[in-house]
Image (tube, rainbow over the protein chains, first blue to last red):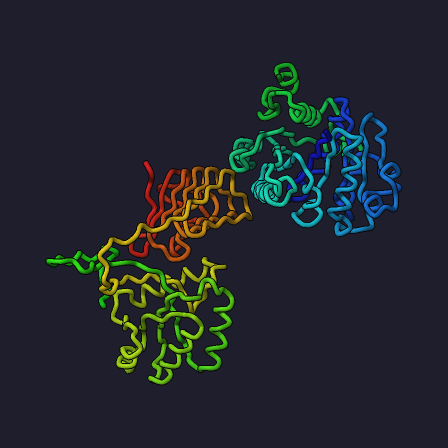
Length: 269
Length: 274
């Protein structure tokens, strides 16, 4: 049975697309047939981060409008097997997404894929609501700062009231993914701690992704950061994917580096 | 007919050889209609529009007429007739009533201009009531008010029937930013935390078995006995029967501790829960 997972946040710029790309790649690397859909119609970004922008011919809206088949629109990832991308349209807007149209596409994808990752646009309007409406699970991407936490709280409320599962009385499974975490800034009280955010949002923690230069580098190179095994952000995403698949993995990178890089490498669990 | 001047304490029962009635004090919520200007056609148009905006709220609801300026006897009779036509039930009059006493008597209304709930009380309540009871159909000219009154001696021998209580509304998950929960006619119980930007409303008490970071408005229809209880007090706003305190005031000794908030003589009191 295919699982639909929405990656959402309310606030923009917190790392939804980066996380969608990393997690879908991680799931595919683990052998699960995965498709990642860009719901950010009009501001498509996922194809850039996945490094396939030059291979986009047809898009999600074309498929909804039956101007192209799914097969024509799906882009097979070149690096990772089992991974496909359904890009957003750059020339349309979010009103092009209809409940019936999105449902038809998802139903068709469900036949072939184990995981369907929906990369939500920012905000709480039509586009974001469409991305989360059919979700079985939600990964709420949050930065350790108050406005991001507030928006995540809001989007959790919307998940509880405006998703299809909520309408049927079955809750959407919620996961917290804390990104851009900087332990030394937490220590100097410039940033909320993991515990602070967990206390406010009260949902299970899927992972903590440390703030890392590797993330920006990976985005600019069009390569999901999870493929950068050297980077702690890549490793943290890999851990998160394991947890998503049900493994128990201890959280890493929560403490500030004090004793130098090698010490951490050797001593880190 | 007498109006209790004191607090909510009931009248002492009259002891007689054979009890034919009891006298009790009671508290009831009423709408105060402040009559700023009375020009019949205009007034009727505005009032009927207001009533139509929330018919269930206004129909058959008791009304206190507060005359902001003196009216002639004819005008006053017209005003009362107009209210009754719109299904409102004027029961008492206050404000500029000096010239109208005989008319008030003739119409079977009570003159409460000398009563304890004076204008100062009214004003403070009004100021808060109209601001945060949004959505309940009130505005500056119509404010839910507490009226303390002794019931007229009716031939009642049986004790009053037990009040029918609506079951509490119980919410078992966090109330998130942007969500609003209203427990109509009863208590609201939340067994999780209430986020900033969330709003709880109840006609009765509000209990939060978690951290209360959002807004809690208890007794929104004017129940001054309503209270707010929470496991950890971190609220943006707490209101009871229209009186409210903001975050800055909440931030006292009970900050982030178990606490209850209640109304005592028009002041909200915060008290720790052991």
